Length: 151
Image 1: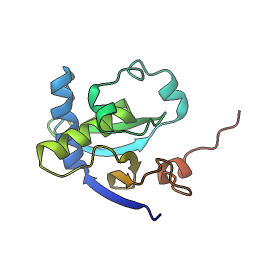
Image 2 (image 1 turned 135 degrees about the vertical axis):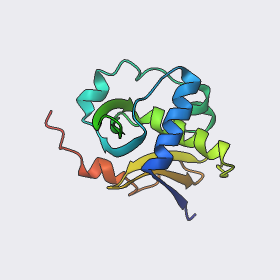
Image 3 (image 1 turned 180 degrees about the horizontal axis):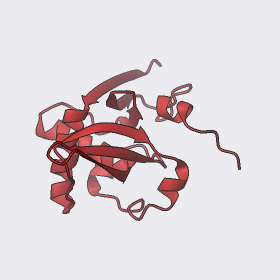
C-alpha cells in the first residue's frame, strides 16, 4: 500500500509566532523579536534537558513522533543586537507548530505520524499518512546530517 507524506514548511517568522504563542500558554517567555536560526542540537544536550519528560495532551492526541533531540533556537533582539540561544526539546517545537496550524485552520489528520525536520532556512513538520507508522527508508534529514554516534 503506498504511503503519503505531506510536508509543511515554516519560515522563521512563523516559527517565532508558534513558539511565543505556545510558550505563553505554558508560562514561558522568549526574548527578542525574531528567530534567525534553528539547528538540531547534539543528543547529549537532550539527555540533560529538564523538560524532556514534560508531555502535553497535544503530543499524544496528534501522534507526534518522539525525537530524542533538542533544537537550539536563536532569538535576535533588534534593539540591543543581542543573540539569545534557547535549547528546546524537539517535541516542544512540534507541539507549537501543531498549535499554530490549529489556530490558523491548517488541517492536520490526528492519526497520522508527525515528524520534525530542520532545513537551512525552514523548520518542517512532516505528516505521514499510512496504516503502518514506520515508513521504510524515511529518515530525518537533520538526523542524517548530525554528528555520528561514537558509543
